[in-house]
Image (cartoon, rainbow, N blue to C red; front, side):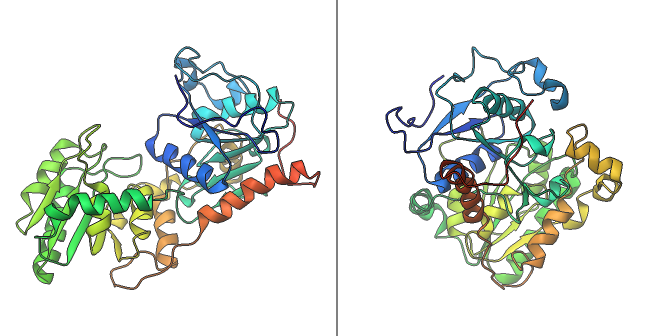
Length: 365
């Protein structure tokens, strides 16, 4: 498989070499790309395909390529990178193996969660819902690192103007997710969402722009559409659809309503500088039972033996505390999580190059 960005040439020895280990999750992949661009050095995106061994716990896999389908993946071979950006459980053993193969020279930045001991990573970048214990090399951001490309947003605004400009304002952009480990978006919940946004649009004399997503159950989508009587543009998600209006809705909507099962959707809506409301925040079920309260629980999480259900209540609480989401048209500037994270990632490599000491992981085993 071919990488989708150009590699740094071997002769350009002064420019740090960066690899991004792409996996199955579109959200994680988008965050890795965003961070790599923000770091500012050329990078190679390597697609990693996994075999059945990826289901083994990371503490058992250790630093290895045992879980990698080498025929389906991009090559993992020298020259080794100065920096690896990876995300989530499956890529952690691979990143650790690369660091070991480089003689400990490669720096590892890992997003979301590792399900492996933190000491093997130079920087772990997470969010409140993953409930990772604190550590010197763990950074808990307010928002995911998704960054809406301004050029793509401008192009979408122009593309979707004919479809949206005739609809009355205010236009309510509705970003619909679906089932997750801590939330069920069933037909009854979808119907209540439809009633909620329909009533809001009626009261304000406006319209709704709705898009579902890959995780939206078909029955839920149907229940949602049945409740919409106001002027609306309703899109039912389809795979690999060039006419997906998601970016167009971000560009045109005057305000947003987002279901509570996703971190990426509110993050991207907040970047638009318009009011954002989380629908049904109270229904992110099982969050209290999933919280890691004991010393043993925190140890199991930190060492990769247990992954708790995502606590979206903790994520939403951070958004509310910063004034990023609410029912009022109060706007707040999102924190520069991406800029700060990129600066820390650069410092890992620049500190090594200059011979300065940096907080980093020990030699992997």
